[in-house]
Image 1 (cartoon, rainbow, N blue to C red):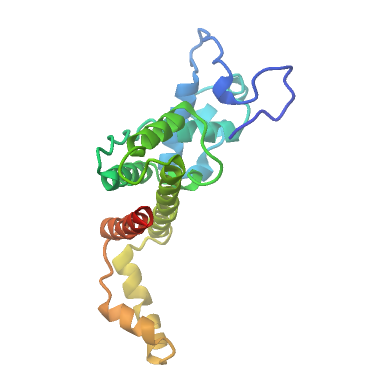
Image 2: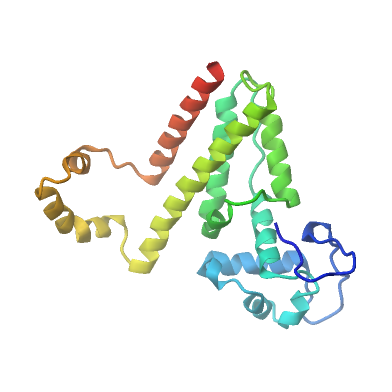
Length: 245
């Protein structure tokens, strides 16, 4: 949640309440939407660390000071970027008795957005997002789940959604960290396994890791899609037991 750092004589503190400045005829016209789209393009290409007001201004062929007419801090820019991605996530369909389908839809659509924008996972956790798209997504998710069998109580609805979101943050960030490691090292998963294989084999040969000695040759080692769906199934099974009790 972004607030202005300076005292501002009664102007709304949150960017969501501040009107956009009127447009001006210039060779490089600006708007919050153009600023946010440029920042997202930078983050998609080079990661979140590449995003700064200076770099966004350069991408828009504008002076950095012009951006401060539209936002006050980098934190506000990040909030706007997150909300733009929430605007890409389809609203879940009403449960109509299928609460699993609703929660699965929330999880899958959010993961797909994070795969399109790998930096998104770094900003999912923390305080609630208060942008219009984020709030609309939350409202639609609550409305879709509320009233399904076992979900008449709003606290149950909130607890289930929070559990799914917590799973999402962990699972997506793990998946993104693997992709990041591949780019940094230049090795895909198979190449990394080949490179680290001899070391792992020597450790297992010591006999100090009997369970890992079972995991390495016998476990399924599913791909990212299967792993995500399996973990989600475990979570939904736990929710089912909870609401049945």
